[in-house]
Image 1 (cartoon, protein in one colour):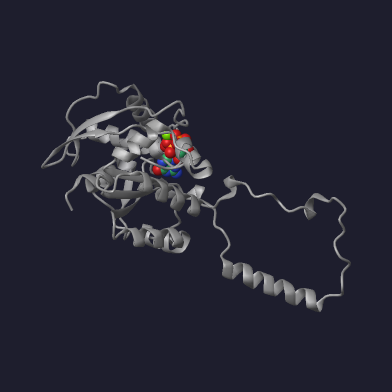
Image 2 (cartoon, rainbow, N blue to C red; image 1 turned 90 degrees about the vertical axis):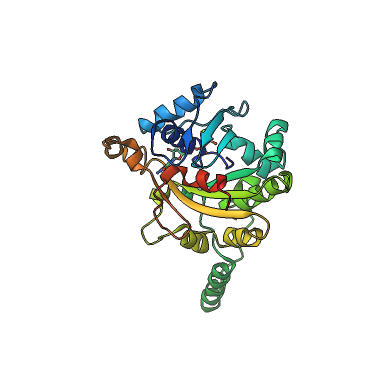
Length: 286
Ligand SMILES: Nc1nc2c(ncn2[C@@H]2O[C@H](COP(=O)(O)OP(=O)(O)OP(=O)(O)O)[C@@H](O)[C@H]2O)c(=O)[nH]1
Ligand SMILES: [Mg+2]
């Protein structure tokens, strides 16, 4: 699982662990309780209680190994929970920790997480041009104004560029590009893009396809270009089923916690297999 901080990686893992461990008719089930499972149990407990997850420690990858079965095969998944800070560091400083580098190099499949609130809508070049033209017309009509003084007024100062100002869409592309350049092309085959907190997406955006085309068009083009090399699928995932702070009471009232999960495919179709759908696709032969 890759994604900058707060993109929903740990919440997804907590809900997934609960489903594969305890839902008997799940399309993917856990074969054996993992030897190291304290972290997974904590994630599951928080998810069941609708507690927002705290940031995953940046001390190092939190290991977890999941022995799972689908209808026709068994898999041993090396699935560490990784702090988003590792990925943020990759984008901002172009450096990667050796242990994370090794994990990416050996990855056969990947989930890339994007959280809607981490995407700031940036003005397009067309919008800036239109605004500049409108401003020019106003200035031509207006009385001549004195040149702005070099008074030291902070409003007059240009803001220095800082890597943290990079828009969310560019961060997602840059991160994916770096991960693809590190991963062994002979190993990495499938990439699931997860738009997390899908419950936050307004109703007028019916599918991840529409969301990508309207909010992340450059990222959508980047995915389309890379579909010649990798098998890529996009999912909208609501692991909590709503805002874990504002809607906590409503979410806690579900008799079956798994009923609050909803997962949609690229075209917006609600997927019956729910939280396991992205993993089931990654493990499938198609
Ligand atoms: N509305 C809503 N919020 C969600 C959902 N899933 C996760 N969140 C929120 O998204 C935020 C980030 O979730 P985490 O799972 O901690 O994200 P992370 O990617 O593991 O973050 P790091 O550990 O810092 O890398 C938290 O405030 C969650 O409560 C969801 O389905 N709906
Ligand atoms: Mg986390």
